[in-house]
Length: 167
Image (cartoon, rainbow, N blue to C red; front, top):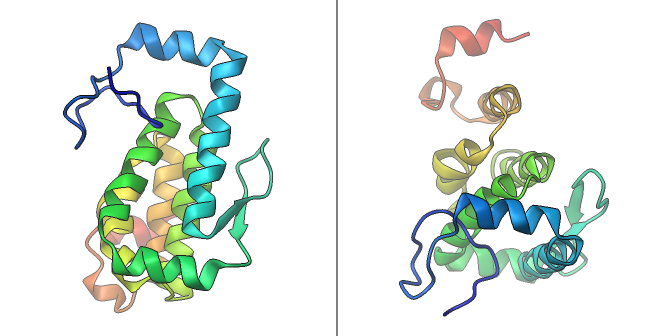
């Protein structure tokens, strides 16, 4: 059977890779070896996107030294956006919910604040945001996106009255 780096409980683009069962996910999460390998794979993919994992405890990220050329690749090839959505979902399955938050925040910052990844913006807002498992963290991220979205009046990813009253 075809193995995949970031397995999920749903079918992806690779029709030969079968989705995971809940039992398999629990078994993975209990295995230190599997989880170590998972983090290695995550670091590898981040490196491909021009991102460094600064802190393995928290999931904190920063731009890698070669970020400019890597971001160019991210901007040019939209299939990366699907892959990032899949990685985000997988982080959630594997119990790395804090990692999800950092990765989504990273992309929101680069797309909305730094404006380095214009072609990732729609995916960050339409898909990346909504992979975040924690309702509270997701709300924080939607608020963060709203604060930096231009023009704010066109923001459709959360109810305006709630966003204005947030905190």
